[in-house]
Structure formats: structure tokens, C-alpha cells
Length: 262
Image (tube, rainbow, N blue to C red):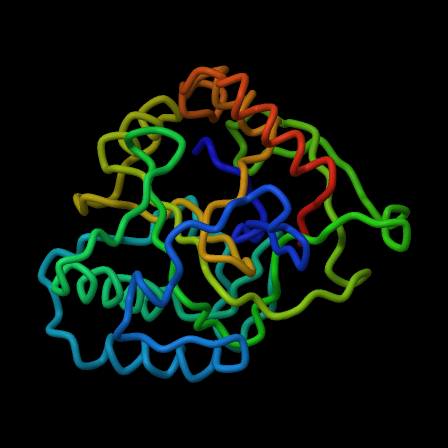
């Protein structure tokens, strides 16, 4: 699907990851109706739940959870399998994301922020998933020896690439403050699914292809290896977007100092 995996929710936390990711539109200005403070994450989650329950249901939601990202969810009470890390009901997650989107549209705001290509957008919301940790951690002398690596493919037909990460059992990370909900256009999802011999599964304009738990409400650089895979094309599990050397250099600068937690 052309995105970095993990918590991607992994997705990528970072107590220290604001080193190279310049914070853009703050949550307070992006959604004044939803209060947020570092100590009030659960309060913000309750507010989002209220919005979702009170909003009129839309016959065709603007945003749906794509199967590519759905594999990262663990049903409440179930045991996590593979790299699934989001313990939350998928339908409720989708409803809350749409509630935030619709509320901002109704307020005359542009809820979607530009991504790395025209078909990619970001929707930043306060973290409403209880206990979901940051997905990226700064690398230091105290934890560098804990890094793990593996050639990994997120789905069977994808080209395996070298990845590195911290095992969440080995490190301590704070609860994420924000969720970076990454969206692909329906056209792009159909294009990539066709290359993999899969069905699109929905007609909604936007599909959630990744969720990243993080401490800032702005984009964290895509990992260098993901940029390379994207440039290889949809037949290898990428998006077909050419490599941007300047963006790649910024990504290297950030990921030399950080790693995912999963």
C-alpha cells in the first residue's frame, strides 16, 4: 500500500521525534470544538465519542477503514496476533474518524492535510484509543542495543524490505497524544489492489490505509526504505511515486535518530 507499517499506527511514536518534523496546524486551531491538553487525552476521547454518537449517520461515509489497515486492529478482549496493536472496535474507530471529519467540514475548515502525493491525505485527531503508546522512540545510548531488524513484507505479495524497530516489551514509551490517520483516494486504492489481484471493497472517497500513534499533530517523515519501495511501483507493493531526493534526505536525518516501537 506504499506506506510504512507498524503502529503505524507504527506507525511511529516519539518522545523525541519533533527533531525534524516541524509542527504545522495545531489541534486547537484545526478543531476548536474539541478540547485537548496533554493531561486530557481521555477527556478528548470522550468528546469524540459523544460527537460520533450524536452525529446523523451518513449513508455513504467519506472515510472507511481499508482492509490493509484493518489488520492492525485487535478486537476488544481478543488476543493480539501478528503486528496488530490497536485494541479498539473497528466500526467505532471509523465512526469517530468520520465524526471529526464531518464536524470540521461543517465548521468550514479543510480537515485533510496534504500527504506525499496528491492521492494521500492526513487527518490528525486527538488519540481516543486508551493506552495506545507512541509508535516511535528516539535512539540513544541507553536503548541502541535493543534495536531489532528483519526483512519484512506487510502482505504476502509485497516485496520484503529491511526494517528495524524496538520491541514494545523492551522499552517504555508514553501514551500517544495524537493519531495520524493516513488516507488514500479510492482511485489509488483500486489501482494498487488491481496490481495485487485484490478487490477494492468500498466506494467511499477515502480509505484509511494506516494509523500512526504519535506525540505531535503533524506528519512524521516516511521511512527511507518505504520511499524506495514506493518508487519500485505497485507490482511490488509500492505506490509508484518517484523518489524525491530532498524528501529522502530529510527522512534519513529523522530515522537515523529514531525507530518504530512495535
